[in-house]
Amino acid sequence: MNFFKRTIPLLIAFVMGVLMAMQYYVPHKLSQDLLEIVTRWDRIIAGFAVFIGAYSLFHLHWTRIKRRVEGWGYSVFVYFGAIITLIFGLINGGKFFWNDKQDGTMFDWFYYYIQVPAGATIFSILAFFIASAAYRTFRARTRESTVLLIAAILVMLGRVPIGNYISQYIPAVADWIMAVPNLAAKRGILLGVSLGAIATSLKIIFGIERSYLGGGD
Amino acid sequence: MPFTSHSFGIILGAGLTLAIYSFLYQDNPAFKIAENLYVGVSLGYTIIITWFNFLKPDLYDPLIVPVFSKAATKEPQYALLIPSLLGIFMLLRFSKSLSWLSRWTFAFVVGLGAGISIPRVISAFILQQIKPSLQPVFSGSETIFSSIDTLLILLGVISVLIYFIFSVEHKGAIGKLSKIGIWFLMISFGASFGYTVMARVSLLIGRIQFLLKDWLGILQ
Image 1 (spheres, helix red, strand yellow):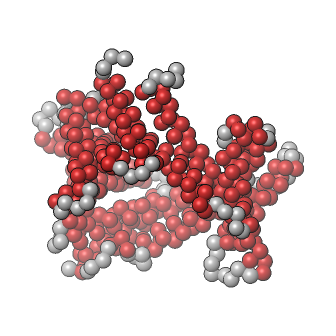
Image 2 (cartoon, each protein chain N blue to C red; image 1 turned 90 degrees about the vertical axis):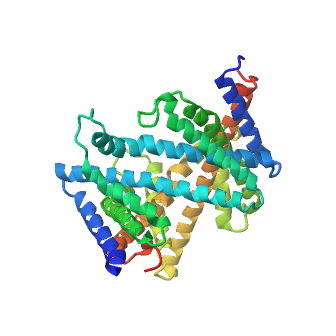
Image 3 (tube, rainbow over the protein chains, first blue to last red; image 1 turned 30 degrees about the horizontal axis):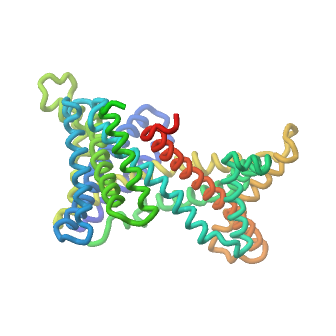
């Protein structure tokens, strides 16, 4: 049984990893077709993965409702929002879900008038939280933190008209910070991350990194 | 304004916006209702879009429709049974006795991702990032400032990379270079912070415009 539970998954990862790494260096139609087929398979599997996420969320809120934990009533709104969106999505403007998606349906209405405004507002609220966090943490205690503080202030001022009113050089300095020291540091980080990603990928392919198998037998 | 689905949508959107902003004062039921409703609608939206954008065109139309519809002109693509099976195996994660089958799916996805990423990361990130870092400092047409910038970028990339080498003790020349790397990183973090704040502020401006223009009609 260990063969099915451990050896086969490691074999699948090895075969797929080697095959797809080789595929890049084979400029043939068959190689391109293979890439197209497996990425399509990957999309299908990702589609199934969405149902795992949906189940987890539904299960979490159902448990909250069932156990009547504090604030369980709010979980009802998760169900309400999800079910009503699913119903209108499946009805698909009267054409139903087995036909192509129709435009201008109630499903789209939910998207434009609930999801878009609520999503944009939640993300815009972060402006206040970031400002409040910055007020508490941005203290020029060391030279390094002073550099961080000055860079942040210059970039912020350089992106708004008031920066230009204060000094015509501020937007130019902000652009220079983004284009030179910021670019250099980002490039260094990216190179480090890329080398790390390659090392991790090789460890997965050769079965050294097995955490994706989870615990147990 | 006549009462239409659009005007009702604007009122609903404005209500949600105000309910969410009410959190800035303190946590309250209006915010929690809006937040949970948003989570629910997003979940429903994700499932439906996954169906219409991925499962329907990639699985239902080429495999299920030709098998069950007599009017279908195309042959069923039976090879799609493999990802379907792997997808079902993944759902078995919730079964105590068969959850081990989900490992096959994860192995497929992780192996595929690892294999695809190695050559592409080398090409798109490592080589493409090293190339502009090693430009000639002076080839005749640049100003002295652009030559200094080129040198600064090279110094920044090398010093940041040295800072991330933890297998060597940061002493002497390595220590000094890694210190320079920290300075470059601090400038970059500050710049990223400033950039993120401005992006959020522009979203905030968008929401205020929505309230004042679309909802109240004060701004024209």
